[in-house]
Length: 66
Image 1 (cartoon, rainbow, N blue to C red):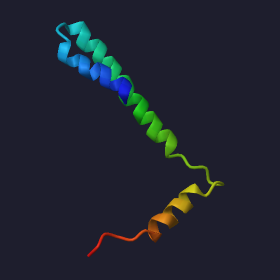
Image 2 (cartoon, helix red, strand yellow; image 1 turned 135 degrees about the vertical axis):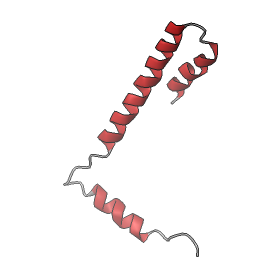
Image 3 (spheres, rainbow, N blue to C red; image 1 turned 135 degrees about the horizontal axis):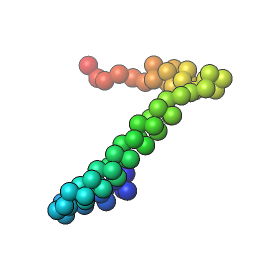
């Protein structure tokens, strides 16, 4: 996230079209890597039982106070 902050800060100083394109490329690459990372981490192997452990711990958590 810190690497994305640099081009985002650079938007304030972009005064030419090619700079906007370069900054857009950097921010777009960060968004693409985020989407790939989310898809990759959502894959849980069946043998590990990780999803079942998470579901059982989420069910054991108390709800909001009434």
